[in-house]
Image (cartoon, rainbow, N blue to C red; front, top):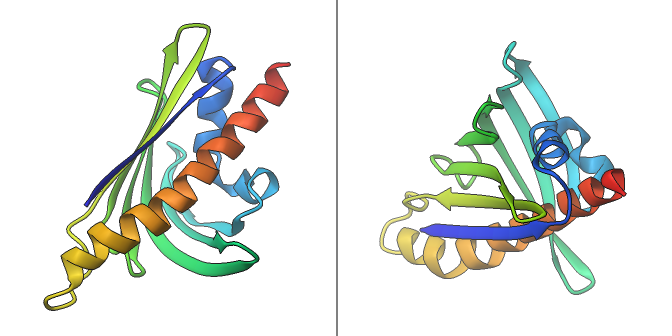
Length: 154
């Protein structure tokens, strides 16, 4: 499974990257995030992070949860994750923030072989988990990060 979610943001790359990398602040600017906890922090800003978000379906919210190892690469304006617990264990995620025109292109790529469920694991990843849950949450996350960066740049 591979999903690519991208958004052009009318703000410079610096403020966008700062919000993308400061995950503990996500629940303040992203209403679909229930919590983000840094369980272990390294000096580079990465570490072990636990995240919980809701995937809205009309008036209903489907709760999701995962734990990841996180690496922050400010020189490349990238944040990388490897999901280490949860349904999406083994998923690799790359956030990239690049200057584009008068603003910023923020992109999130998720790659995963799917859950270890006999016969249906890959199908579940490609038909439901990726397009419905991953993109459903990632697109909302990009939009919220974009709104916060644009508001700070205004």
